[in-house]
Length: 143
Ligand code: RB5
Image: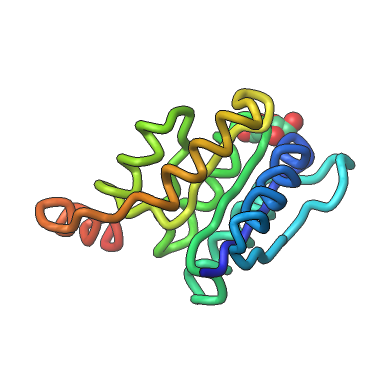
């Protein structure tokens, strides 16, 4: 499985930790940047990660900014992206099971590294439940 990751400067430190964590899990990572703490614009990176997932170059994406809010808004502007901003393991599990989220957003200034690892793992390990949720997910593509 290939996972695209991207962040702005506010999410850079956590994005680096997540890359290491994914690589330790032997997952293939496409690191789309940013590559330093120099100030950049989160819409650029949310869009890039979303496009990388929708094109099929990556199976899933993870985006990080200071709060996760701005970069999740940007990712969700890309048609076909279902990005869930998660602050708990329960949210991470549910955003895959119910929303079939193909991009996970995290806040580098609001979520600890350990919590982020647990959130990422829960999201990766959960499966979309389909059934009644499929019709609603299909509706998202028609908005
Ligand atoms: C950048 O300072 C900050 O606004 C950004 O990382 C993010 O929190 C936006 O939602």
